[in-house]
Amino acid sequence: MRTAAIAVSIGLALGAIPVAHAAPGVPDRAPTAKDRLVPILGNSGVMARQRVTPGVRMSGGDDVTFRFLDANGQAPTECYTAVINDLTDQFFFLPECGAEVHKQIPAGHYEASAVIATKDGDHTKYAVISDPNFDVNGARVATFDARIAKPVDVRVPFADAKRKFSAVHVGWNMAFFDEGMDVSIGHIGKSPKGLDAMITATFAGATDVYRAAWTMKGGLPTGFTGTKKPEDFATMRTTFVPGPADAKHEVGMVPVRPWDNTSTYDYLAPVKIGAELVEHVTANVPWVTDFTFGHNPESFDVFTETPPSTLTAGAQHRQRVNQAVHGVASSSPDTVAIRKKGDKLRLGVSLFSDSRGGSGFSATTAHKTTLFRDGVKIGEGGKYAGFADLTWAGPGSYRYETEATQDVSDLSTRVSAAWTFQASEKDGPLPFTVVGFEPVLTDDAAKVGAFEVPLSFRRQAGTPAVKKTEVEVSFNEGATWQAVKVVGGKAFVNNAKPGFASLRAKTVDAGGNTSEVTVIKAYRVVA
Image (cartoon, helix red, strand yellow):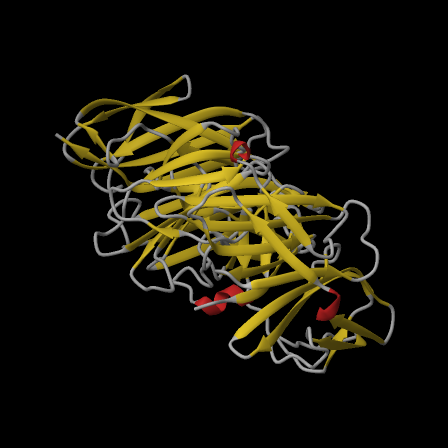
């Protein structure tokens, strides 16, 4: 199905669910194509996708009339509009179309973008119109006219390249287009200083995939022509640890917007088990690699995303994704995993990140997140595994616990974590450390006998250094645990017998804050 849509990306520093490809709406089910058309909340490559009812009328808002004209000067039958105030986190997603659409929007300064379709027989062309200075100070009329847009023509220097996907990014807004859609761009008024834009395009060849990004300062231009040279590209060769043999596996590199470090949305290529995907990407922006597997053509059971990296033009790179141990991660150093905002304590972590430590999500059989204050349970909830927005109950000693179980894989069947910290009336990030287990495995397995498990320590900004680390291992799925030696950032395990090894790590930092991570069936043990 050919898709054109617009998405809004809001930097709430919540963490949560990824966007590249069809992001899951809830953790207990796989996503559908409809999930592409909802706003995206988050930053630093980790997103929280939240359903928003189109056309919600906000109390105290001003009447705004949206007028739309297609490239023929007629009322369009297909258009999407996004309006966002990046200071207040207020956003409006309007799938309604026609000559006029009426909304109530609170006074403020916004960025607005519209995608307008013009149909001419079997051919449809799309115009992206950006208004970076969309001010609401009373009733107003806003006109988005596709006739001001000019064509986008971007090319890569590979003879077998056929376009699969393209996207237009401006500020917080993104519009994306499948396959060889006819796209034009334009803007209304003068762009403010510091507003960035990016155009990306993905092409499929006979065997390889080509991805290019063009960045620009000062907002979205009117029309754009861009070409790349062979020397602009780096090559990445990706293999993966597969899921079930009957599942569909997809892999792809996804561009990261340089101005807010947000991973975006792009085409993922189907790859057979045991095969290698070769991608050529421009080295001017950071990239993440997304991996999914699932059984439904429009959904997935597992999603992992590597942390962002910038490649070297002309160089050959290799990586292997979806490797155990799958556990807890804050996704990137910029992500705020635990924070206080107003009367809420927000938690946002990935519970099924792979060994690279990026985002990781799975369909779950059950999940729970609980908040305690001074040893007393004060809240439970969270629609998503690893995410909650529970009520702060005044200054005190808090403990956040989260856990999830899944049966998609026979590894990491249960993952849990807990953090203790002091939370005062001050808003902002709270102490957070997470331990990652990074053993070198062969097909997610280690042999019986002595075995080293390197540890990673990811701390949220402002968190004191770790002063004490304890690691335990279990060979009966957590029924009993054995302490192991920890030296130089490594845990020294004796894999006692074939089966599965579970791991648990506890830390105490210099401020007395603690963390605990448990992964049941972390890796296989073979003879």
